Image (cartoon, rainbow, N blue to C red; front, side, top):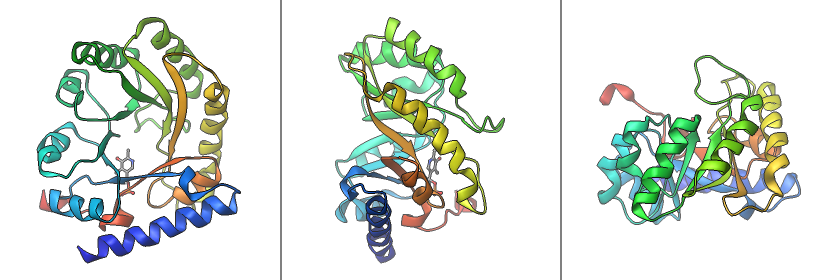
Length: 233
Ligand SMILES: *Cc1c(COP(=O)(O)O)cnc(C)c1O
């Protein structure tokens, strides 16, 4: 557990250094600590070390840990089934993984029932990998328009991308570049339900390349909490 704080210091240092090399400031990049498979105790160590934002990829894990973890912003970063939106709508501060109008409409309905506006990102699968969720860059614009026309209780805050794994992360920079280009098309627009501020790209092994490509939100798990051991679950 003492490693969590040490790892965090290291990751923060690397984020700051990379941002500065690109002429940006360290504050420009939000660190979301991804705590899937981790215990509330481990998450609280990270919060005590200054983590403000936690990411989970499963609804069940958010529900299980929510009350046991100190106050923090929760991010839903994994594939979300429509029938599970109701369990997290009043727990998370942002949903990164919106990849269909059907899901957006359900989020809109549930947010409306709670009297809140939900911040969402659209998940773009710019590499068009079959194994990954997300819309293609070509579909993004249409989905944005559909959401803006129909959803009163959603605010579109940006785009999210999970790049394919590559031994050398430089090899996948093109996929980040493509999403950044699309992000920039919407970033200046003023609209009550569209206010692009987050480009969520980069994980433990590729966050430096993602920041170089323009990411301002990185989702880092194993580099903070250590390698995940799924056999324990
Ligand atoms: C697990 C996960 C991460 C973090 O991955 P690490 O390689 O552990 O940093 C980031 N984003 C998503 C969507 C994830 O599911």
